[in-house]
Image (cartoon, rainbow, N blue to C red; front, side, top):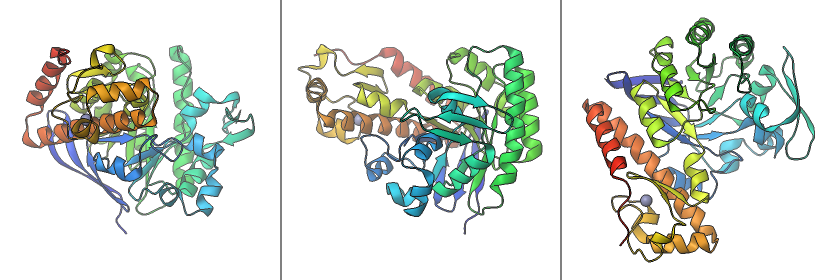
Length: 375
Ligand SMILES: [Zn+2]
């Protein structure tokens, strides 16, 4: 069985491109991971997600443990078989979503009890239970169980929460055991305070993980604050391991994170926007419900090779959105995921060629021009 490994094949400034190897296939980095919350990337068939260029998907422990339950998925052959996706899957630990979605939370050193947002039923998560659930799901990349403090929080509260997460990181490592081909990632916390981020990185590195995530960002602090952390945070983590920025983001967040040495990202944005009539293109964001598209026979983006752009006009996409037809979410989601994966492919090629700064300049120049004028 292929052991989990990461090879950096090119660097340009702080940016890296490379390959992560897992038992279920390779992941080209920098990688964008579409989010398949409830064992589906909404509005997409798995083969369509693959066709956009995705090497790996993300699944949510919190959602899957509540419905249909990790034990049921395990009985049915694991998450890959259940959702018909054979390639790598990363699952989050449930920690973040328990904090943002569940009710009646009770947090102790041991773990957290909570009530389901679906039916109010009572559940428990701890580092050990999170490792067990992610193993039942068959996840290729497992995330350590951490706590995310609700914002706004004082520096003292962020420090206390980070230290709890570091104790949980050790318990996650102990419970994960030795699983060849599978990986466990630790999660750096510490808010926007450099000393706390450094303390967190040191604690995680001492435990030793297969990869490291930068957590606790993209939670409303704004791009400037996020980039100010990313200016130093990736450099605190072991160079030879993949670095994953959780929950990011918009295309310009992704470009800025890759420039700062991030290898992996995930976000619901391209799929969620696709269902609300928002398209992301090389020229920025387009709102398809805007009346200016009503008579426009041109595609969303003339340079895009996705089915929505190859076969349909802006006028059609506008019509099906207004008529609330299901194909609207399907086509816009496909386009958005395709655009995101094209962006990642462009970043990887630019890093390999040592031309990242030119690529980034071109990226910003096209966005500054804005969308094409109405006919
Ligand atoms: Zn397209």
